[in-house]
Image (cartoon, rainbow over all chains, first blue to last red; front, side):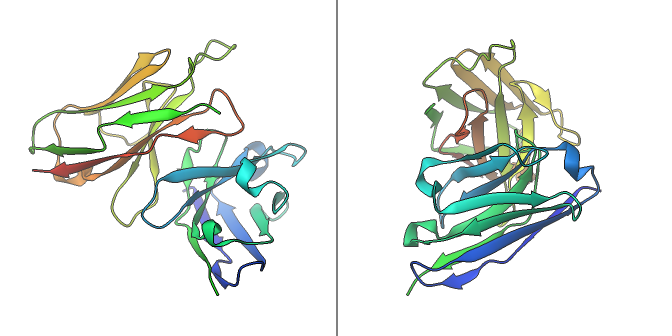
Amino acid sequence: EVQLVESGGGLVQPGGSLRLSCATSGFNFNTYWMAWVRQAPGKGLEWVANINQDGSQKNYVDSVKGRFTISRDNGRDSLYMEMNSLRAEDTAVYYCARDRLLACWGQGTVVTVSS
Amino acid sequence: DVVMTQSPLSLPVTLGQPASISCRSSHSLVHSDGNTYLNWFQQRPGQSPRRLIYKVSNRDSGVPDRFSGSGSGTDFTLKISRVEAEDVAVYYCLQGTYWPPLTFGGGTKVEIK
């Protein structure tokens, strides 16, 4: 069974940092693109970033470029998102998803940016 | 960026009746490889999104056959042949042809009348 389990969310002040993790199982992690998608409270879905199988290609939505860094550890079957200079508008549930076209999703982790 | 526009915003449906959701893109979604990367997702209340349809009309594993996708170019449709109570959800289209970024439609909320 494919499983994706996010962790690392929490309450952080504006300008602060967080590191999200996504532990996976049930599939060959190192053969898939992986992605982060977020959903602000009461809003729709927004693709945030993705990364290719060996980590050599990384893509971001413009609003997070220079602040967020996606990475992966194929030895640990895990995906990460380092989030710096956080803003109130980054408040959202963050989901990790498998492959470029988002075939499978985790349950999400909540990030709240507030003073 | 490709803009995805869904309609309607809200769709009240009687149980057992059909439902249809439209998704239009600002650019043709035909990729140079010949594929059209238009997907549909379902998000039930309090749950994570789940992909239903990929590349316009292909159902994901475990998706009931009352769900179908169609369309081409810039106009796409998700149809539910007979709505059941478990279909109450927000439905999103997603284009994966021109990226980054991948872009979602704004969502359509299906509710029971």
